[in-house]
Image 1: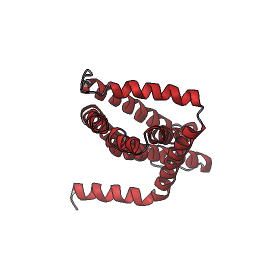
Image 2: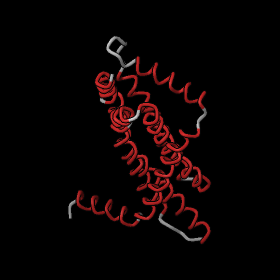
Image 3: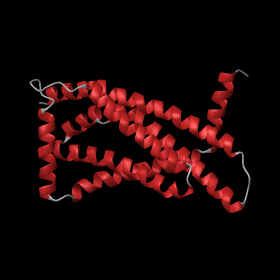
Length: 214
């Protein structure tokens, strides 16, 4: 079998072995999305009005007469956030005490997306749903899977360290650590692609949808 074939088979085996873990991580993320969307309803009138004011200012900034968004600046800011998140998750994965924190990060990520979409839909109805599809999901279709894979790998590695320490077992931790790090680096590269989409694709889509929806 060629190197590429062995690599592909190794990746497939990894995902098969950790399917339950990925289901758990996905469930946490979905619960975060649901909690975020439900929190919108719990906001007071003053809080909602303040957010509406910010939203209106933002939408005016997408109008034809507004200054163009600097795609490179948006991409660099997004890449910076993605890189910091990936590094934090990687560090938490190599520390046993970081396990519950990774769980919290997953939930918060889902909460932010759920709150954003929920608020847009509540305030703008169907137009808000359309706007959220073109403003939130283009980059997140790449970023969310990469983020969840890093988070799941972090939990897996941290759990392995915990179990081996409690059972006083020896393991090939160098090999496991290398695989964990390579996977995180690969997913971080995808997060950089998400930053590229956020900087150069999403603003154009948002401007187009804003003009169509008026």
